[in-house]
Image (cartoon, rainbow, N blue to C red):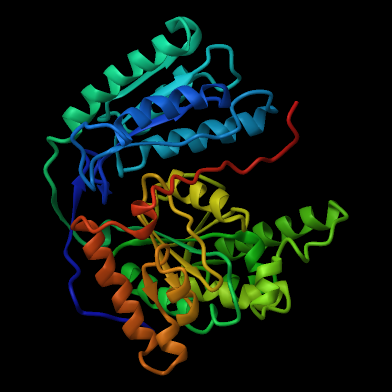
Amino acid sequence: MAHSCKNYELQGYRRPDGSFGFRNHVLVIPSVHCANKVVERIANTFIYGTACQTTDTSVVYVTHQHGCSELSYDARQTRDVLAGTGANPNVAAVLVVGLGCEGVPAREVADEIKSRAPYKPIEYLTIQETGGTEKSIKKGIKIVQNMLDKALTAVKSKGTLADVVLGTECGGSDSFSGLSANPSLGDASDIVIQQGGSVILAETTELIGAEHILAARAVNAAVSQQVMDTIKGFENTVIQAHADIRGANPSPGNIEGGLSSIEEKSLGCVYKAGNQLVVAVKQYAQPITDIGLTFMNTPGNDIEQLSGMVAGGCNICVFTTGRGTPTGSPITPTIKIASNSQVFQSMNDSIDLNAGTVIEGKRTIQEVGEEILDYMVKISQGTRTKAEINKQNDFSIWRLATTV
C-alpha cells in the first residue's frame, strides 16, 4: 500500500468556502447551443487579443449541443453540469450566455452557480433581450473584461494534498495501461487520500467485470451495494438496448492495443483508484463532498466523463493513455501520462509524463506515482499541462434520452 511522508506544498487560490483552485479562470459558458457562437466570439476576443492574462488567470469558454428540446431529467442534468462547471474552484468568475427562449435558461444556470459559490462574480445575458449577436458580443466583452481585471488581482496561497479533488481517467487504453500508467496513478491516488484529499474513480462501463473488486473495498455494506447496483444497472441498460458493446467498449483502438474484452479492460481500469476504501457513490456531475475515494457514475466516453468530474468539483485530473489522446478540460489542468514510451514519444506534444519506463524496468510504479504528485506541485506553481498549451477546451454532457 502506498504511503509517503513527503509533504507536497501546493500554490493556488483559496476560495471563501475553503475550496482550492489550481487555476483562476474567467469562464464564458452558453446555457444553450444557440448561444455557442456568441460565447466563442466573446472569449476569442481575449484568447487571441492583447488583454493581460496569465497561465493561472485567463478567459476560457466551452460550447455544447444541449439546453433545449430535452426531456425534464436531461434538462436537469444539463443545468447541473453547467452549474457545477461554473462553481468549480478553478473558476474565478462566470458569464452565462443564453438565447432567451431555451429550456435551460441562462438566469437559472447563473442562479444555480451563485447558490453553490456565493462568493463568485456571476452574470448572465440573453441574445434576444440584448438585441442580437453584435450587441451581445459587445456587452459580453465589457462584462468579461471587468471580471478578468478583478481576477488578476487574486493572490495565491499555500495548499496541501488535502485540498486536492483528483479526477482519474483512462482513455485510448492498451495492454500496458493496467501494468504501468494505471497502477502508478493508483499509487498517487492512495497518497492523496492518505494525506487528506479526495479522489474520483469514474467510467462505469469500464468497471463491468471488476465490480466485485470495487464493492469489496467499500467502507460499508450500503456503499458496497451502491457500487454493485450502479455498475450492474449500466450493464443492464446496454443489454436492454439489444446492442453489442464490443467495438464501443473496448474500442477498436483498445482491441488493436491488445485488450481482448471489457473484463480485461476493467481489471486494468480499476488500478487507477489504488487501494483505499470506497467511501461514497455519486451520480454524474454531483458534488464530491467526501474525503477519500468516491465512485462517480459516468460513461466511459472520455470527454463526457471528464466534464462530469469537473462539474463535481475535480480541481486536477490525471489521464492515463496507451494509444494517445489530446483531451483536456478548459478549467481543470489535465495531466496526460503514457503507458508506453512509444506513444509518449510519438504524441509528445499532447502527453506530459511517461510510465513506459515501468515496462522497461527503469523505474518502479512507486517512483512514477511520486513523479505524478511532483508534477501536480509544478502545475500549481504555474507550469501548463500539454492540454492547456494546446488550448484543449473539451466539454460534453452525458445525454440520457432522445432530443424532443
